[in-house]
Image 1 (cartoon, rainbow, N blue to C red):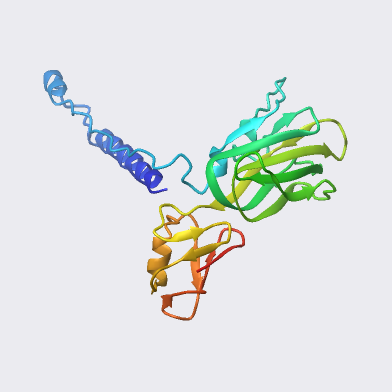
Image 2 (image 1 turned 90 degrees about the horizontal axis):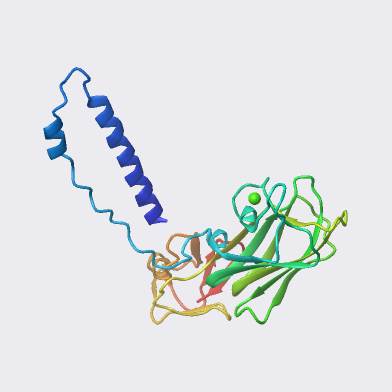
Length: 254
Ligand SMILES: [Ca+2]
């Protein structure tokens, strides 16, 4: 996120510099050709840092590797990218049921919720939602085989720790054979290089000595991706306190 902000700031500064140069230029002044050549500024090296990890931001699901079994090629192509392009009116479509859509996040995340945007006509789609840590063992997270909601649906992963999500499209209410998803958003987070021993499966964070709430949250290294708070009246965090990460309903206990 900071890299994006930094790049954005650099862009703004760059644009401002261009504007300032444009405003300062006086057309009646002679243009010293040789001087201009000699004073051509040396390009400033771009301090763009290497990304720490491939999936580091809160929009990790948008960067996932998506596998589909096919897509509508024409007359208007509807490839898989259209289900994560941020536009609720564009969609991936493929004429097959059942068919799987698999998201590979590249690293395990604590998955909170999946939000789907379906066809703008409100057509209901029937599907099953699975999550997996290793891509082999799949856990059924949501059974929407008898779904009765169109437009938008939200399913909770209940803090499942996984690297993959699979959407098995079963059918739609008009039974025309077309699977389609307009948009997928997945909430989740991960601890990045935390000094604490964290048992994600048991949702336990072990701390060796008491620390302030602020230091504790800082040490968790959520990197500001999601808001976190510790539920305790005491000044220090200790055994039995509860860390709530405000990403869906995920709760961890110290
Ligand atoms: Ca879209």
